[in-house]
Length: 611
Ligand code: GCU
Image (cartoon, rainbow, N blue to C red; front, side, top):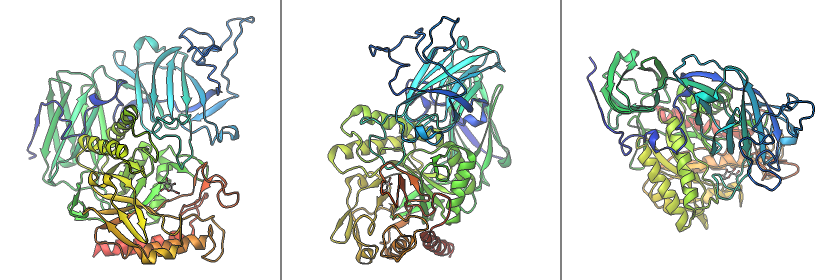
């Protein structure tokens, strides 16, 4: 018999992940969208490249009005033979969605600007009284959405989902035309800002779905292991509006089935479950959850586990864990494109498994939802991060709100993923007062949204005559101190680490969130020859030797990086050519010599952990 209780309560944003109500004005994203009644709008979309914004502004640079026939969101079909149309969509100009435009046509490789996407579709509502939402997994960077010539809304942020309700009056059974204006221009006051070390892939980079839900539906829910318990789950369910409803929550394998009465828009619950199998890297146990509310049934796969810091250790389910990590960009190097599918996620995470990694740092932005769901199923721990990267405008309140919005989106989408153990609020931001205020505000926001995971960021470290000093003031707010070090690549030689000492000013777990060196795959030479595989191999041998000498609070590392990846910063005409070649795998998925150094080390660490 499972004893349990549920109580009507306004969601306490302090204890649990904050409800959607804290999201921005636009309709909060529907959670677990793939379990809903969805119709995919993926496929070939027609496009117009519009670097001069002709479709959005007239020749006096005044924003075009809704009915303006020359606006690119309006139909481009001439009414008669004399009608003048100076824009048009054609199959001759089409792009795959989801997909970045950079990798689909050489003319787009470096393109930064606006591209208008259009596709037509028919749609018959299955439930005449239901609601229809238009859902985007992500669009980089700014998008404006129009259906049948009417604007649904706009969104900023390149790595998080968003959706708009489609007014019933806007949707036709036949020949709807959907137009999306996408602008990937980098801007000083955006997140990320102007300079990054990755490719600014533009476009509708993730799935586009029509989602049909009842008038009153389950918009969002959270379920997790109760803190300091191994046999009690808690959570909340939130509808899109207040309603007198009875929901049912079921985990059949645990013989848990509860009827939950609602008289508002949300309800919290907690249930004791005697024989709960905890999720772990060695046993990624996922349970089938079923939520039912009237005609609506949502299923999900969820794991239950705890993660915490105790002294200077990280505990997973109460036991110290060493993070055998690797950093990953959301990119398929063989095709030089954004990863966006379940197959892509399996490819990348299987490579991490080949390294015998038990953790991935998803750099430097939230990856697509397939990545975190596949990590759940493969038992790989995840560090998930928002792109507060390098020289963000820390003095701007608007920029802070943008960062918070992306943080909310990241946590809202993935809060039910057991694999995620660390939320990161940024990477290598320069130490100055306004930055530490900005970043500590993000740490506090993340903790308020989710007090069940560790909060981190890649902090600054400085080398004082061979002593690596970690005294970044942001370290007083994060749960662990994580730093990126490139001793022997950016300055000096790999052998310089032999005398390296570490001076960590915090009694917290120490995680090396990046270390790495470049090698052009196949370039063989002696170890002193920079850019050769032998140099990179030497680098990793020295790094591993240093890892074996690290202080007691050392809990793991995530070398930079799994695969070679595209970056416009990398312009050596022989060894880079627009690629950052720090991958342990090259552009074609071949292992470099350094791969085997890390694999051997991780095999040793795994054996140690099993003793
Ligand atoms: C930095 C940064 C990475 C970058 C890497 C490099 O630490 O975090 O995004 O790609 O170093 O220099 O290769």
